[in-house]
Length: 193
Image (cartoon, rainbow, N blue to C red; front, side, top):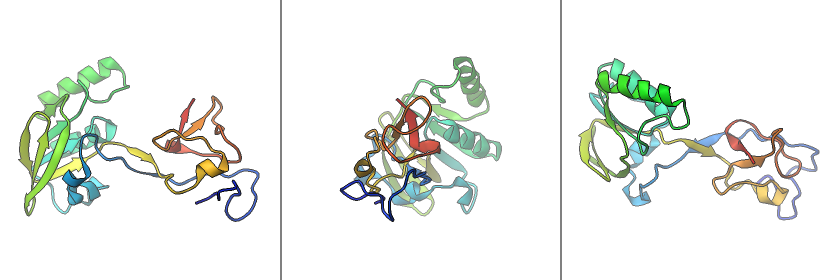
């Protein structure tokens, strides 16, 4: 970790420390560890697929999931987009969400609102079964775009007096200094109090 039990920062005393540690993929809610297909979960970059899938399931309702649904659809893949909310892009402008949802449905993307994955199974080479709380279907590829979380596990931030939320996000005030001592941060590591 960066800080020992006494709050001493590793490598010596610092007046300020800027954390640039990035984020890791967040596991889809509702999937128990034993149900997670390692191959699907390892896909951190859809651009690394060896070939264009004929039929792909994308799990997630954020802009990355929506963007890749549009990309795969434009290349001719049959796309199924699964998300927990009534519409994708929660937190975005409602009118824009409504327009996009209608446009995606019209373009042929199969939308699965209010549907959460419960299991993924590998049936054979290039064949996966996605089971949700409402349905199941088979796909050439299953992609999870369910968000990212700060990569703070094991850093010992609590020992350095840096306040974090249960999901690892560093708590900051209105001017973005952390609500703790001697540490700065950036990007997806922080949320205002």
